[in-house]
Image 1 (cartoon, one colour):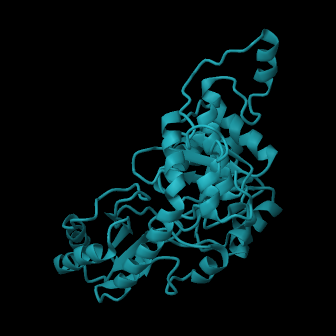
Image 2: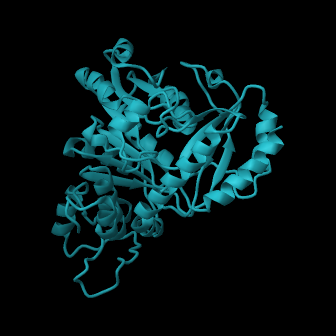
Image 3: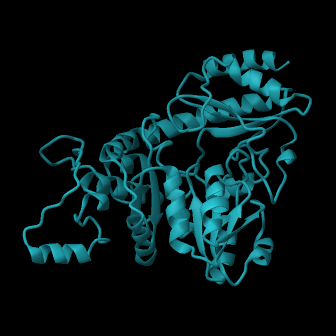
Length: 395
């Protein structure tokens, strides 16, 4: 186990490992199992009553050593105290929403939220009598205060937003929510470790570990991190009640991916910025949606709250181009796959025009057809050459 004063790269190399002085393999084993045996009936009763305690072996769905190792590691990555691992990123979004909301409650969700989260709110939660109001993700504290109701129980945040990459002033919004007794949930998948949620007023941090933690496009996992025992009891109980579980094999793969994440993130951040700046230089491009660029409308928030960026960003083309032309650009790329789940080693391009749902703000405000790019581990010169050929097809 590393010390808190060590760098992020050192900590993710050592956290949840057996230890450098132990006699054995560098990596822990994969522990699979359903039934847990007890030495006595009394021990079963005692452990059964402590089912939410850290690392209590009670039954397979409560996790085992492989799960616990990943949970400890992700809690450290995000600066929290406890972590619940679930099977997908969407499950990580759903569990805390269902944990804190009940019939008659009100929830505030940014208009730029991850599409499946929005569908959850409009479908299952609405059917349970939970009302969702979508708000402008760039709203200020005063604007948010005007949307709060006596029955507002959750302020959901996602910074930056899916596809459109608006940043939110999380500390200011969290202060408003907490003043009225609401919990602050945040999808921190883009921020990974670059944004420390609990230092900025977040109560529950959500990540799709499918992305950069796994890093190799071969696992589906999600995490829910909290920083108090009260929140842990609420979130973990909800997860257990609903039977959420993650494969220990996937947890082991995520632990393996975690060991190289610092190196991959550093490379992909630089590569993403290089390609993003190249896009900014092109006359075909109206604007680039990357929070780390000075041209981004909330770049000041990025500099204040983030220590770095990932390699996912958007490109808006000039309005003279059509969606069909943007699709032709994407379809002809040789090194960019067409896929949604970013954060792996491979570059991706996804035309987003027509797939962005907005009710509180206008999707047309982007100004032209948009494409979301994820920059992987390929040589940037090769990627840019591929994109230059794509620009020719745009015409």
